Structures are given as C-alpha cells and as structure tokens.
Image (tube, rainbow, N blue to C red; front, side, top):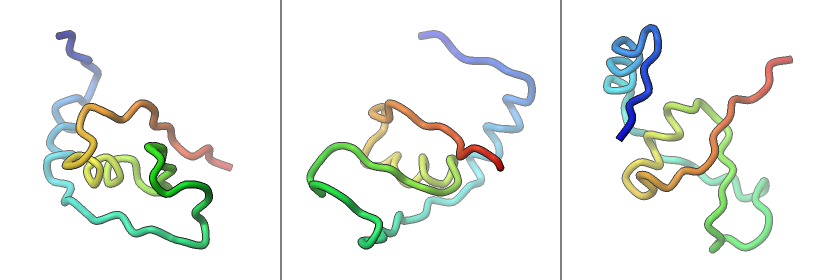
Amino acid sequence: MPILNWLGREEALKTAAKTPYKLLEEVSELGYGDKNTENMIIQGDNLEALKALLPFYAGQVKCIYPKPER
C-alpha cells in the first residue's frame, strides 16, 4: 500500500498520537433529514473529529475538508 509522505510528517504523527479522543455531541436543532443515514456533517477540528470517528468508522471516511477562512 502506498504511503503519503510530506515535510513535517513525523511531527504530525506525534501530534495526532497525543491528541485525546473526544465524544461528538449532536446539536439536534442543526440536524436535518433521516438520522439513520450514513452521511454526517461534523463541524470542528479535523483531527479531533477524525479521532472521534475512528472507533466506529475506521477506513470509511470518504471526504473531509477544512472550513474556508474569511
């Protein structure tokens, strides 16, 4: 399997390993549609969100993108 390499990769891996797992909290007033669908929109820090999803959705995340800065 190919491995993605970039400048600062080792430091990024150390940071990811140190980031604690957090539970995601649903904000029901922002929800829409069928709660049993496979799709989710999660607003927050990408690393924290991915670590929260890891136990349940490892290898299943299809898209993640940063919020545009204004």
